[in-house]
Amino acid sequence: MQICADVYDHGKLDEHGMTKSERFGIIERILLSRRGVRFVDLQDRLGVSRATLHRDIRDLRDRMNVPIVCDRDTGTYRIDASVERYELPGVWFSAGEIHALLSMQQLLAAFDAGGLLTEHVGPLRQRLLGMLESATDSADDIARRIRILSAAARHYAPQHFQHIAASLMERRRLSIEYVARSKGDTSQREISPQRLTHYRDNWYLDAWCHLRNELRSFAVDAIKTVKTMDAVVQEIPEAELDAALGAGYGIFAGKVLAWAKLRFTPERARWVAAEHWHPEQECWFEESGSFVLRIPYADHRELMMDILKYGADCEVLEPPELRTHVVAQLEMAVKKYGDAVVSPSSVPDGESEDIDEERRPLP
Image (tube, rainbow, N blue to C red; front, side, top):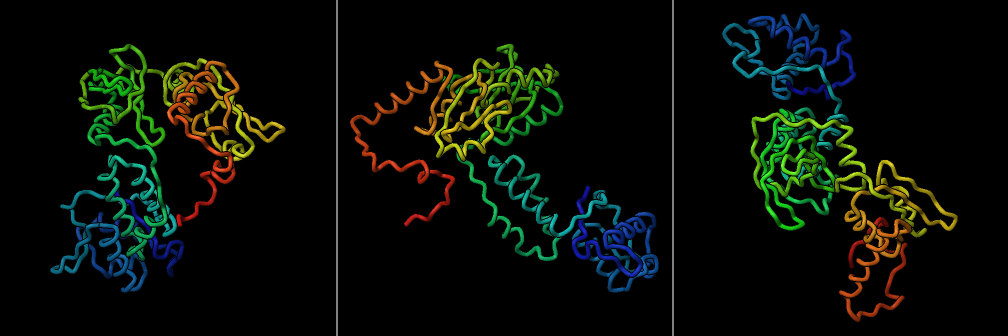
């Protein structure tokens, strides 16, 4: 299917009350229904000038890639049947809509750091450019004005991703060689893929592990080899997937074990209050201006990393075991700095150090 666009006189009517998109559709239907059509017959059917019809045929051929050929011997126009079948779907975009699509393509290019979709989506960019009259520099201008910065994206093998995506859609099991980073161990697994999750710039495969006989979330970048099997997957209900892998905080699997209650300083509260940490979170402001956030979690590791990044602006109120974990980490961190002495005047207050404030160029 070919995406087409009427960007030249979108919404404008000719002398017979037709838009250019409507004329394009009529021209295509006439050429498909006959072996050859004279120019004058097309002109009479559309009721337009020779110049207008010439432009329509040129735009269909050059910009929409419709294989229109002119038989010089008979003086007729036809669609070349030897060219791979195309179709005008009747979806017509304005110039503004095409700019929006180009912006989406630029976002996707930055989002797809591993290059998975580049070869498939790349041609779309050229097609969209061909739909714009001022296509000379519009894409470059969009690329300059949209930036996506990935802070911790890990690289993965695109070919593995394609095998995984195909198995997900075809509902086939996978045989994978997986490296567990916690211990560095490599194991061979037979898994039933359930869904792909993109979380914090990285991809994870939620699957039933037939080795462990339970649901697991596998980091795609830690999959070293992958092979599609003939066996059909073991289907897991969506509700069971959510309960096992999506109930607690972050990417770590497991049913909810506890609720964390965090207090943020008034300086930090204005930013944290605008953030969404978990679908079931509870939050409120205190009279002092501090912000309290309550969220469920099944594994403290990722939650603790997010708590620690706020430093003195975040305090764990409960449960006691999470507070103990955080205190232990802070004490170990302090020991690493030995006898370093920090004067109070050298520590900026929360307002001036905030990363969300307007950034200033370095001197």
